[in-house]
Length: 277
Length: 277
Image 1: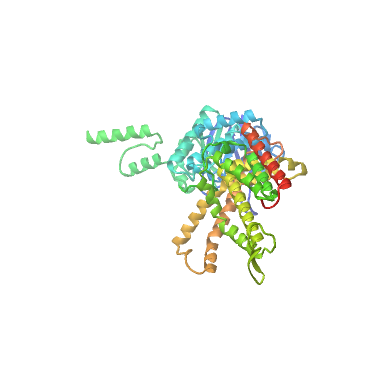
Image 2: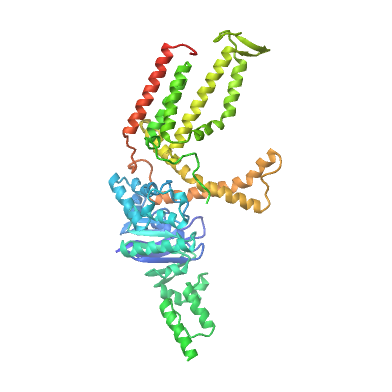
């Protein structure tokens, strides 16, 4: 079943230019999709369209087969959650559990259920021991995990991460990526990971490249990164491992283009031993 | 990281700390009422005695409590001196002239001395009791308490939930904006801005380059927070449930009884005993 479906969707912030134009795009239930794109490519607009924070100027958006309208926004947002970029601008309360409770309170769940949801959500992001901590004292990665927990408390079917790793240090970024992988594999939540870190896209089932509001490439991440030259024209680059392959090749080593570290390691070992032998 | 325990919460576990914030707020109101009902020193003595007990049971060091007075010492003394100089009256409370000294409209009388003393005691009790509340109650639970106490006002359509949410968000953003102020200030200083020298007018003017970026960023944050709240199904106070419920316990009964006894005592003393002793 299609969790999210865009049919010929266009959106513009001001008259004239389009942030998103004639976009057809869908996310299957339980799928992990990475959305790549340079600044201003329409990534964040795409995210905000998915759960009705923005309304398309033309075209239709469906969530689980139902068209998103002003009337079912509440239900749509229960199904499609978004975590945003800035870890400091998403929390309404000072204490972790109060903030995670916020969404569940908004939809009018009974108290006991909210308690269970908090435990579930904090468990899913590995923050259960911080339940009564002060958010201001947490690290960036921890704050962002709390923000994700706040969305999870609504038990969404789809989780959108709108550059949620962009403002974090490498460690915080790894924390979030691990959480996202786990949510997708263990909880079966569909993930739309919007990012400009190519390494993160490798985890996805499918990657989409946006450029000036249009989808210009789509396919599994490996096949997208094979089209290196084309990526460069959209101001995107290879994941680190891909870049290493290119550099080794330029240095005269016969390694294949690969995104698998094991494969690359073996190829390097072969090259080295044949050279020495 | 800078310590962001703004306000003056003194973190220990004590009887007073664990009492319900609503009862503590009500107690403060009762206390303030009592010191203004009190017409003689007996009444104030009762209040002072109760306050002393409260300080003992709060485990906040006595010196720390007194330090709260230091902040308003100037104000207290100023009021007392004015009162002393302008008070005229022929009443005598001890052997000696009713008027000690007078010049034009100023005079020092026995009545003035007694009145000023009374005023000083009143103000000090007031300040100590209020700061005891903030020493023993976190800003978050104070907000919860105020929200709960204001709930009856929903009846006349007063936006209680909205007010509480505003307070809670404000508390949440104080540490963030404090950090940011520091950052902007450093950034401006790195560009050669000078905040420390010059006359007061110049120094006030020097603050403008800090305020403008701070204000802009606050608006941006507000915008993002709004999106994050919408994404978590926020739609105002209707249909909303609350996870945290304040519960009254035995401590609160004691607080209530002590408060009631104090007010009754002060009223009786006012009726049956005269001014000032």
